[in-house]
Image (cartoon, rainbow, N blue to C red):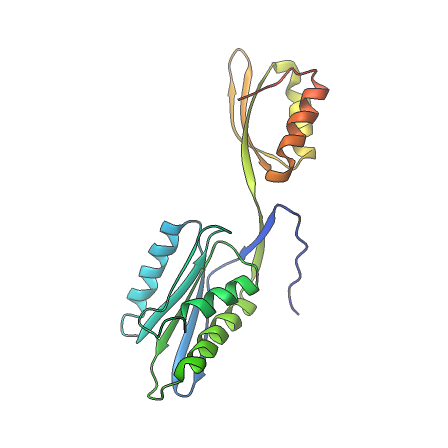
Length: 204
């Protein structure tokens, strides 16, 4: 049964784990490897590892997307536009982030032509992405707040209501907390706290 996911405005889908799937097209093997990644550097490192694993392959083409602004793809020697782009299109078709998809090709003796390559790389990526387990992550933004000890219970209660997390706490003359909140709720959280505490919180 296919997974269904209900997403909030700050949510996005990522691969739940690494996954590999192989298809054959006219004698050529296309091995699609899906790997969760957290950054450009992480994607590049994981790609290098797969290249070492499949060092004898004809091509190791890839696409990765960390977020809406950060992505890259490569044809790795295949004709321009026949491999990396269809892999990225498959990623975007599933609306995934923080994902690297490498399609390794072992040439089988029959040339596929431009259209055949686009279909083969796209299908290899899409079939693997269709099968990989997914999980939901949330875009979070840091907020630093300082307040009197007497407000501790209020802060924690409101933080829970707004689905935030405590990253760090410092207890000195006053309390300072570094929080992480869903991006769309950050300003509402600050405004609501100011109302409840009569502006007793200082946001840094």
